[in-house]
Image 1: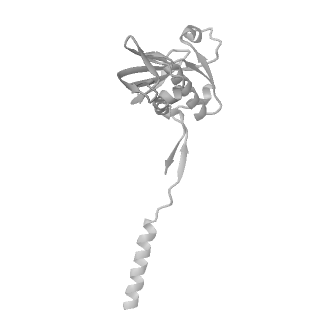
Image 2 (image 1 turned 45 degrees about the horizontal axis):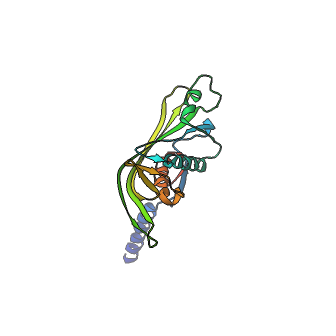
Image 3 (image 1 turned 45 degrees about the vertical axis):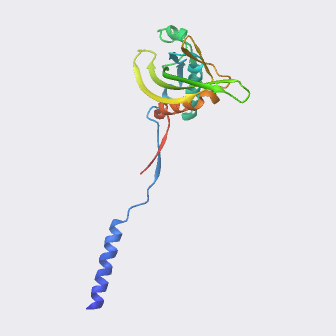
Length: 199
């Protein structure tokens, strides 16, 4: 009788543990939410900037282009200036870009601070808040197909002030404000990247 109890108990424990066994988790690569490959030719207008001068918007546009091209293969990006918009959006458009990205940087809460280096050279840095908004437009209809934005506050260098307006014109933008722009661009390009998830 005692042996029977032990056998029954063992069988029950095996059944319980056997039923609760889950298959191992797998990592699965999901396609991007915004697939640009069907459009092939993508327009990119130089980002606009608000409350600042210099090359920050050009640097952000270039970095955005790099991130998008790295995220998806099989696409080409054509660069445009604001002056090209009437041509790209006309019915006689020869650019062959069915969609185009636009972006806008807004600079706010600029708090400058500085000092002198050991060689008595002035150093000017500032804590700034930068908002980046990017949207994808259908060049045939003018309709917005996708939009994403990001905001970050960080200390940057390589700027001066002209009439109270910050001017971003560092010799090495990547060193002066590259981390800030990289983070903003990484955030807004989330939908164009494939992502790994556990299932």
